[in-house]
Image 1 (cartoon, helix red, strand yellow):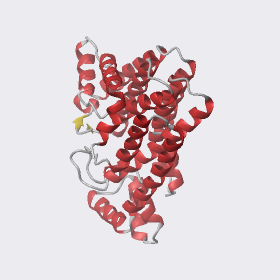
Image 2 (image 1 turned 180 degrees about the vertical axis):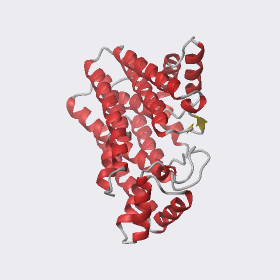
Image 3 (image 1 turned 90 degrees about the vertical axis):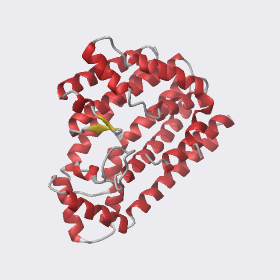
Image 4 (image 1 turned 60 degrees about the horizontal axis):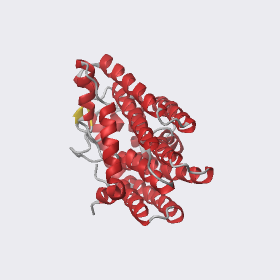
Length: 325
């Protein structure tokens, strides 16, 4: 099934308008800055976050200039955070393309990220909506705090799902929650509708991150990262956390501690990945996604009245769970 076509169907023109505005925001006449911004624009992407914001605005009312500038502001904030994350993680690739820091250097990447962040603030100011501006500003702080929490968690010997979800809630889940909430706010949603939209977006974000984490246990050129890359960076994700906590196999716990210490090698990562698969870690993560999917679809059933938007959001939920990259 072509989920993306179904998702886009009610917002085709609005999405085109967003892409044009976003591309303009990521353009500059200066040689080096213009070149770096062009490099980022070439990534494209599926525009999952802007589509969610547009759909939520339609669900709660209508898409306006406020929605579009808020969507550009949020996507620029996310883009800036990725540029900075690649510097922090010393990543050489992003979506199968050379990262900004790899193509240029860390100094350029940090400054380009700062430029994009400032442009995000500029666009969100165009909304003239104090609550949207405040929400986006808080999102920036939450994303940064989430990154710091993830870094500190590497040093934490505790291996628990609670810690895993706390990190997600301040990263991917916070981002999707903001998309849903700001989309609803831009259409004048009341407080009750806003709170429901926030919860829906948060569940979507958790599912999205779990699916991303599952990818790390399989080789795929489309994903743009090798198997075990998260473990190389000191991260233990849901599948391996489940596998470790469902067995007393001390040798695997020793490897997990080496992940956190940053001393594990490729062969040991391969052993831990295989152990995770054998212990049902992938199946467990997929079951958790299905639980969140059910909650998301319940929200759609109870709160989205227009059939085209309901169908689109349902396809969105299914795509997050079933996507291959």
